[in-house]
Structure formats: C-alpha cells, structure tokens
Length: 337
Ligand code: NDP
Image (cartoon, rainbow, N blue to C red; front, side, top):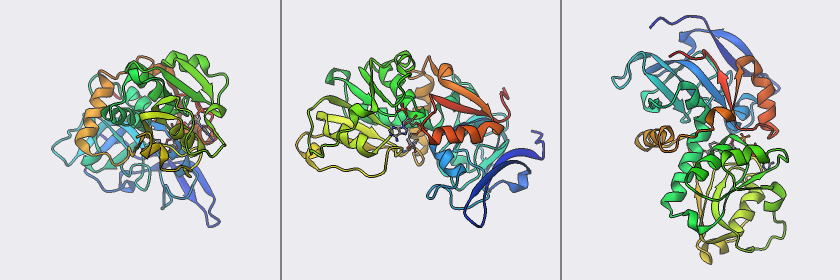
C-alpha cells in the first residue's frame, strides 16, 4: 500500500517552563515508534485522558514531544505480523497508545500487533471510534457487573457523569439490558438527551453528593456505573442496597474515596475497578464483537460530534471543563473503505 509522506500530526511539546503547546506538523514514517503493524488512521476520538496528555497534566505522558490520541481506527498499511494484512480494517484502544506511544492524532500509527483488534464487520471505522475507549470501558464495566450477578429485578441502577463519553454509552448499554437507569448529570438541559439514550429518570449531581460523612446511607440503588469518582462514588457506595454491584472507572470529581468498610462487610456491596487500557487480547476481541452485535447501540451516530485536527484545542478545553455531550470523533483521513 502506497504511503503518502509527509503526513499530518497533532504534536504536543513542553517548553522549559513546563508549559505545553500543540501544533499540526508534517511527519514521516521514520518519526513513528517501533512496532509490527502500521495503520493508516481514518478516525480517532477525544477522551478525558487525551485532554490530560495533550495539556501536559502529570501522570499520563512522561515524554514530549508527543502525539496524543488513545484511540485509532483505520486500515493496515504494512504488517510484519501474519495475523494482519494490508487492507484489514482494525482499531486500537488503550495499551500505551497516546500515553507514551505516539497516538491516533496522526495520519499513520505504528504499534505492536498485540494491540490491534480486527474491526467487527458490523461496525464502520467511524462507529468504532464513536465507541472507542469510552465504549469499551462502559462495556467492560457493565459486563463485570452482570458477571457479578447484577440483575434488572434488583432495582434502579445509576450512571454518573451520564452525558460524558463513558456515561452516555453506559446509559444506552444498561437500558439495552433492560435496567431502570437513573442518569446523574450536572447539565440541566440534558434530560431529553439522556432519555433518548434510555434513561428512565434523570437527577442532578447534587442528589448523589452526601456531605454527612455517615458510613451508611438509606439503601436506594442496586448499583451502577460510576465515571466520576470522589464524593459521588462514596455516596453511591454508601447508598447501595445489599449485594449491589458498582463498576467504577473515573476521577473527574476526584481521586480520593472517603469510605468505611461497612458498605462492603454489612451490605455485601461489590465495587469493581475498571481498567480498560491493559485488557488482554482474547476477552478484548470478545467485547468488541459484542459491541458490534447484541450490544450495538442504535443511537450511536446521534451521540457523535465529528471534528478536525484543527478543532482539538477547543474540544480539549471543553472536555476538561466537563462540557462534552456524548462522544467526539476526530476525523483524520476520513472514510478509507
Ligand atoms: P467525559 O468528559 O466525556 O465525561 C465525564 C463527565 O463527568 C462529564 O461529561 C460530566 O457529565 C461529568 N463531570 C465532569 N466534571 C465533573 C465533576 N467535577 N463532578 C461530577 N461530574 C463531573 O470523560 P470520559 O467519559 O472520557 O471519561 C470519564 C472518566 O472515566 C475520566 O475520569 C476518565 O479518565 C475515566 N476513564 C477511565 C478509564 C479506565 O479504563 N479506567 C477509561 C476511560 C475513561 P455530566 O455533566 O453529565 O455530569
């Protein structure tokens, strides 16, 4: 496959004072990291972690200059691994992509073959990126809750950060599994959006933000998916019913978790941590096939905003302020099929 060089990349650099700047620069294949599979990127996406990487926040990316983008979907251009051939439709989410390995905000990426997932036939490249890390994370969180016996008959489940990337997909997947989903949001005007995704009720953030410090609160929820952490997660754990199940993945409201052991030892509440980046290959492929079939979300295209590389600074600012609704897809080469 012919590779056009130079190609465009969104490169973040850090100056001596620690400030981060980003610009679109020309790059060549020789600038890409080592790996067995070179992929022409059709689309990437914007996740909260990308905003942290692009703005130099401590703990995500150690080495700059760096191309962010923890997600990429595209076509294999070159492969030194027999599992993948030029022309294959693939996606990569997580592992070290966009963290310390140059990521999807670039026309080509080069990665180890173990990171590459064959794109299921029933997903377009763009749909793969509307889902992206957010969809995969929502799916593994809900899958874990189901495996821990969370059932619709147990009562209402909560999704926090409900209009965000992980949150909006979690609402849709739980509704698909016939749960009564209560969407928790800070956006007063998001009720129609969340009901369209399948929420049965929408409540404000303040309703899940108990300040009493009581170790146990009135039992209300069967469990749910928390994407924000902090006192929201603490409140959710303390107000979950006997044997309820909560999957937790996020930190936007804080990394501290103020709890006692009582919800766990008196009510048998299960709190499951979700780490999407390092999920092993076989179960990863299985979850992606599920997202393409029985968990295919009918509203997927409706929750996506498509932007160009040039618009990244504006949208990075928005996601840092919690102002995104649904998923942001970054068009890199556009449709290649
Ligand atoms: P988004 O920004 O798309 O969504 C986060 C949502 O949280 C916002 O839209 C907003 O929703 C809500 N929110 C924002 N700020 C606050 C706040 N201060 N207090 C309470 N709620 C807030 O991010 P993503 O969906 O990409 O990621 C969500 C979280 O999950 C992040 O912390 C991210 O790092 C983490 N994550 C973890 C993964 C893992 O593998 N562990 C994988 C993917 C994401 P609303 O206005 O509706 O309340």
